[in-house]
Amino acid sequence: MNLFTYIKMKLRQKQLRLFIPGKIYASVGRECNIYFNNIITSINPEKYFFEVECKLGRTDSDRFRVTPTEENIGDHPLILKIYDDSGLIAQQELTLTVAHEISSEKEFSLLLIGDS
Image 1 (cartoon, one colour):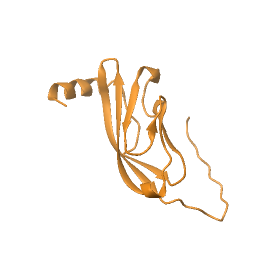
Image 2: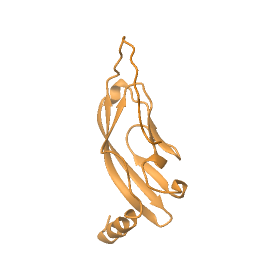
Image 3: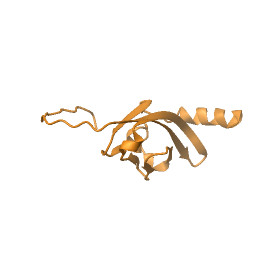
Image 4: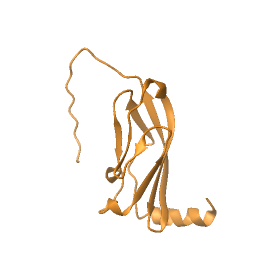
């Protein structure tokens, strides 16, 4: 990427904010999803094209999904790119960390509180 392209991307990126941590955790045998409309500030996320570069998983129109296996345990680089009609407007490098499946014979309850 040349300097001119980098500066143009940074200027357009100011209009679109990303809300995604630098590390995403996944567990063996459980599907993990990154829904694109949940990680950007946009009234109309459908006007953007999302591309994910990662050795694992696949990119659908509305999400990235992966169901890791035992062979995938460890850290994997993941690059998220967002495009609009004028080209690349945002890019972020993440780490996808795959952990062993954790099983528990003891039942438990989990309360998740959020705004979505």
